[in-house]
Length: 259
Image 1 (spheres, helix red, strand yellow):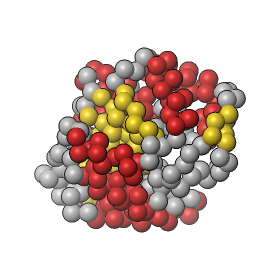
Image 2 (cartoon, one colour):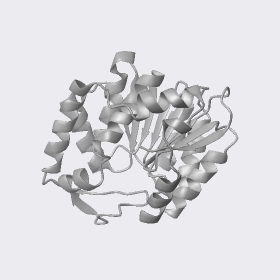
Image 3 (cartoon, one colour):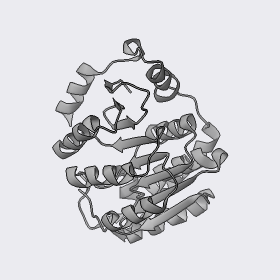
Image 4 (cartoon, helix red, strand yellow):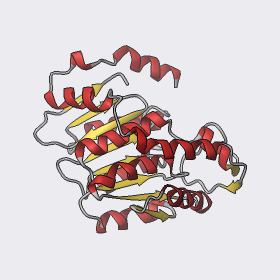
C-alpha cells in the first residue's frame, strides 16, 4: 500500500482548500477533532488490551478476501485483536460522525471481535439508536457477543452468517438507514453489491463509511465506482477510510483530505 499512500499524500489537502461550509465544518469539527467522550472510550480500550492477550484458539470462517497478516484457519483471539482490529482513532472518528448526524439506525458490516462495533453502539446511546452488525464467522461472533455483554451494550443486534444471504433481507425490513460502516468482503464485486443493497433504504442525510478503500486494486476500483454513482453527491478520501454522502443540496464533489 506504499505507492497508493504516497499518491494520497501528494494530493491530500486540509481545511484551507475547502470552500463548502458543510465540508469545512465536517473536517474541522469532526474529522480532525480530538474531542470526544473520553470516559466512554475507556472500557472499550481496556477490553481491547485484554483481547490482545487472550490465548483462546478459534476456527475462522472467512467469506471475504481474508487477512494480509495471517491466513491460518485457526487463530488466537489475541492475534485477531492485534492484527485485524481497526486502531482506536478510527473508532473515535466513527463515534464523532454518528454524533454529528445523530444516526439512530446503524448497520455494521463485519463485526469481528466487536471492538469497532462498540464505538458505534456507544455513540448511539444518547439517541436511543440501534446497531445491526453482521459477522460471517460463528466463533468470532461468539466472542463479540461476550464483549458486548461485558461492555453492557444492549443496543446491538448481531446477525451471523454469509453476508450474501443475510444482508438483503435485513435491509429490506429495516427502518431508513442513517449510517453504514462497510468492513466485510474486501473485493470489488461484493463491496459494490453491498453498497447497492444498502442504497435501497437510505435518505438524504445517510452516511456510508468504507474501510480500506486503498487496500487492494479491487477496493480502489470499487471506490471509483462508488464515487461516480449517480446517487452519491460528496465523497471524502481519508486514505484508510472513505466517507460517502447523498445530500441532494450538495454539488457532486470528491475530496482527498489529510487525516
